[in-house]
Length: 255
Image (cartoon, rainbow, N blue to C red):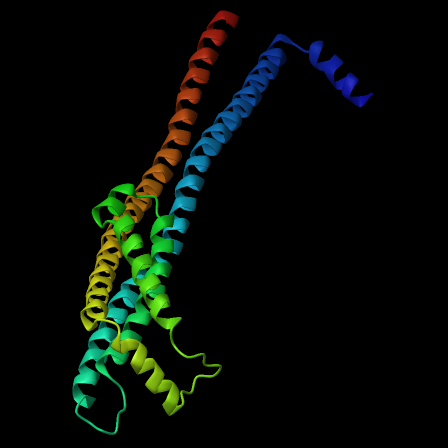
């Protein structure tokens, strides 16, 4: 009822009051339109920022895995070299009852499982060019071939239910390995050592790609933030100019 009374008084008001009413109505419409346009601009740029930030977070998470392999791959090769050096120091020591074949066979068994885990992580990376460059398919095939060789030899070993070997079991293992060419074990070791190096180089290069993309995303986020702020400001100024021009013409007509 009060609202109806106010509207009635406004409609019956003087010409001067009507001008004021129209002016305030136009200002209200201007502010509403400005708010809507600002909201639209903000939503548009926020969606872009959200996509970039989401990609940046994913790359940060990927980098944890990359750093892990930048450590694990060379560590596996280092352990292999340390193992070879260790055998060279004990080879002539009668206190150690182990042949070169058996020692190197044990060194070989560590490689394929490490490489298999690396392959799984490499396959998840969406970069076919990098996979082709470092011959991921070949690494996978050669790793399975080495693993098959390891299992073929291991199946001939005497069954052992605990981690400790009896002297008779060691002799049986040595007899099995006598039928295996040492060069075969050595060739697989050299092959897997090389493939592990390739895995390390793969993750090194991919790490550089990720770092570059992260830098691009950070720059894009800063740029879009600035553009968003400027766009809202320019849109408001433009609307204000249009509103002012319209008001000037209307005031001229009324006068």
